[in-house]
Image 1 (cartoon, helix red, strand yellow):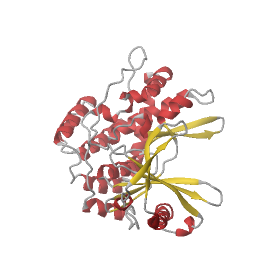
Image 2 (tube, one colour):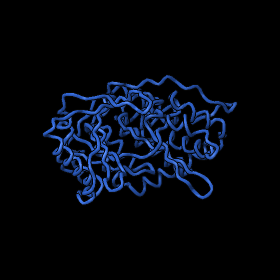
Image 3 (spheres, one colour):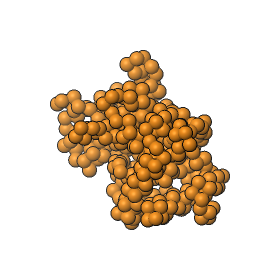
Image 4 (cartoon, one colour):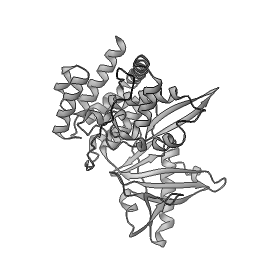
Length: 356
């Protein structure tokens, strides 16, 4: 993130996103990697089987607005079997398949989203003993998304939990307040220190560019709030990894340039100086370097697998590496052959900046 001379918000661009990004299949090399790191499992129910419904009813929020989700209607004689299989999947995701954790749970509802690339199913599971509920998601497996989830696990301060079986991806629900909801309802709360919020947004912006996580509009991440002695800590967490290192526009990987994030940009410009922005960026880079060193073997394995795949277009790769060469003033980017090479160059740059 950068500040102008007057310490005012930089203009927010109309960043273009490729809405028709293809779904990249998970190839044998990636499946082998997932098995090695316990990300692969045999599931009793797949994405295609959940798609076997003929009717659906729209889901509205409490204000009567269309949520873009709908509830599929399955044949009555299949419901019990579907629900039992979903509970087993939840046990695999949460407890390595120990079905005792779902003994007193039931599937409350299944929702299907018609918006986005992977058209996910959202499963709500409820504990009948105390009515505590949880969610998990079943999606079409997309290699881009899997690589994004793995990079989040390795290079961010966040842990992610997911399983893959052939063309099916199961993801844990990431708890938090949607970024757009947070700006409307909570950002200006007198109980919250705006500097802490701005600091987290700067770090999030830096992390997205380094890992090439794109399309982080306010509705594609959540804000987690943690009470800490006499103040609150904030963490911004991505929840959508569909646009992992696909686009050629560098600004797609910088949340500060999306108009949906303007409240965060304004907050940062109002409460941070160029010196503090640089400080927070350096803190995030140092954290990434520490994680790279501790997870270097896993990161190397992921690099070796992803380097063999074409997960973007030659035009996007060319455009992005030229932009980053200018951004970092490093002509070595021009030698990159794919998105994996670009991320590796980003990490090398981070290591060099931290060691200066």
